[in-house]
Amino acid sequence: MGENKRRMLAGDWYLPDDPELAAETLRRTELCAQYNAPGPLSPEERDALLRQLLGSVGEGVRIRPPFHCDFGRYIRIGAGTFVNFNAVFLDTAPITVGADVQIGPNVQLLTPVHALDPGLRRAGWERGLPVTVGDNVWLGGGVIVCPGVTIGEDTVVGAGSVVVKDLPPGVLAVGNPARTVRALGPDESGPGRPARGGAAPGP
Image (cartoon, rainbow, N blue to C red; front, side, top):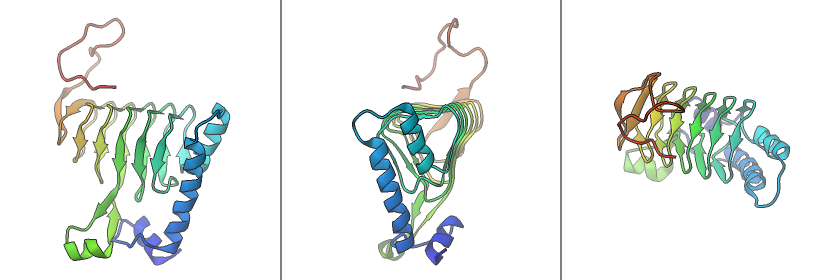
């Protein structure tokens, strides 16, 4: 393993313009191109491609193409999770998505961090901070989750929100930056239940 890949995996500053990392990117490019290509793919063929691309895929995971990532192998997705169209998962650090998660269209899970110092940024230094999404989370359409963020299980994030800090379990959060609106409980709206007030999460 080369120095830049070692540093990337350790969460240290590294230079992404590296032949070893470029080879991993080429692997991702080829697999994503197959996964995202128009035309009929059986569910079994699509699942097989996903399992080649990603580090870990639970049973019953569905990801609607197009799907985009940096490497793929550093992404883990739990059973029963659904990811809608045009997701972007940039996995220069680990991205962990729990079981039974609902992810709306155009959601971005971002781990890369560029240097604030202009000279270091011009030189290309970056690092990755892990993103973790707990079980049974719902991310509305267009949500952006920033590097280093953990979202607790059962939490709902409203459409278009930008999550820059950790969110606790079982809350509704909305806005830019996302802020907790209130706790969620078993009396929330759903089949057979009346709708309650509050911001709509979106698709």
